[in-house]
Amino acid sequence: MDRFDALQAFARVVESGSFTRAAHTLHMSRTTVTQLVQQLEARPRVKLLHRTTRSVQLTADGAAYYPRVVRLLADLEDADASLSSAVAAPRGRLRVDVPSPLASLVLIPALPAFHAQYPDIQLHLGVSDRVVDIVSDQVDCVVRGGTVTNPSLIARHVGDLALRVYAAPSYLQRCGAPQHPTELEGTHHHTVGFVWARTGKPLPFAMRRGHEQVQAQGRYVCAVDDGNAYLAAGLAGLGVLWLPDYMARPHVAGGTLVPLFADWQMDPMPLHVAYAPHRHVSAKLRVFIDWVVALMAEHAPLQAQFAIK
Image 1 (cartoon, rainbow, N blue to C red):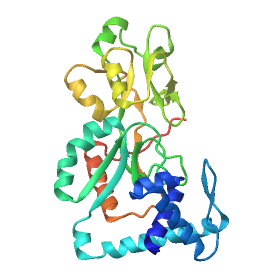
Image 2: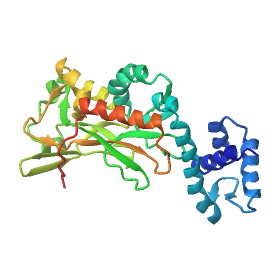
Image 3: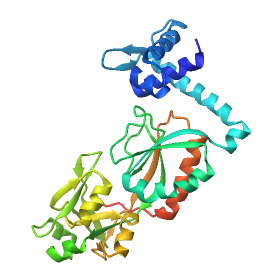
Image 4: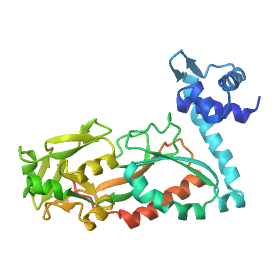
């Protein structure tokens, strides 16, 4: 038995929750992964996993063994990374999940410079606004806006997205410009709903002016769960919407979006890079996170936070 392969197979089964998914990510057959785990169990004569037709769960022995396996695999990777050539040139596949607008408008346009600096990193971008399970989906890290509510993740605050409310000229010609955020709750105006993946519900417009605070849900004729579709709905004149500055800026300059409520503020949306605590921060992941931090310093610099109650 190749002890390293067996340990890696065991860790991957635990993280993915499936022998089949583990086999796929390791580029092995399911039979091979099963045999490796069985051989690992045979050595100390303990059962590490409970297997059913629908799930795989750790036994008590497996739960105690798994963190040690992760640390051992991380130490082996550290040993490889300690070589001068590995430190100078991080390499390998890196799986990252990012929101679709941030990918298309900020990250992907900047990737040629990243690739020029790190030509041996093969970046696999998952582009979506869905909630990704970092462990079972085998993702090295995610870039997400909003508060990270999962206490099992390590999250690094890398930027703050300045937000503002906008509408298309076609909408304003049809409905007029609202003068106060509470008008969005009336029958005369519509909003575009953005369905937050964590709750499945549209996010409200939370604004402040001095000591006055308003949370307006608004009446929407269209609600979407993708940032690019949300922007497209606003540009089509389907309603008032709020956007990060980086998404709105070119459309304001081109006259296809008009800012509203000039004397009102919205809290900036924090932007985080998150990863699992047992996931080793490899050289390739470290340089990617540092690159995102530098990129966000340009596009979404950290701001003082406000809290709308």
